[in-house]
Image (cartoon, rainbow, N blue to C red; front, top):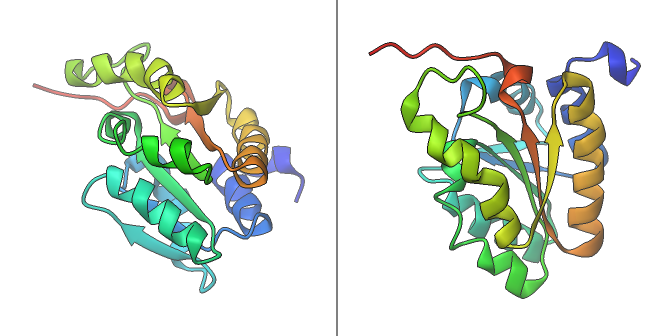
Length: 174
C-alpha cells in the first residue's frame, strides 16, 4: 500500500518493523491507540506499559545494550517526566526514539495540558533531542523515518511530535 493511502499509525507500524524495532514502551494515550493495537497483535513486537515515561529512557538504553531497538510512545505531558533521564542518551551517545502526541496546542480545552505542551520542543532540544514536528497526518511517517534513521544511525535521541490537529482535539469538561 502506498504511504499516502495508509493512516499514519499503519505507516509508522510498517516503518518500525523496517527499522528492526521490536519493543514499544508506552504510557498509553488515546492518540496512540491504533498504533499500539497494531503492535500488540504482532508477535514480533513487545509492548511494555510503563508507570512513568522516564522509565522508557532507561529501557531504551537497556534494549540497545542488548542489541535491540525500542520506540518510546507518550503524550506530551509525559515528556516533562523524562527531562532528567534524557541526560542518559545524551551522555552515552545511544539512540532514544520517541513518538509524542501533543496536547496544549490550539483549541486545547484542558488548561493543565497547556504549559507542558508549549514547553515540549524547547525542553527536549535543551536535552539534545532532535525534534521533528508533524503538522499533518501525511508528515508523520516521513518524519518518523527521518527520526529513526538519525536515532539509530547516529546514536541520538530523536522525537516525532504529532501536533494536536493531526489527532483531533480532546474535550475536557470541568
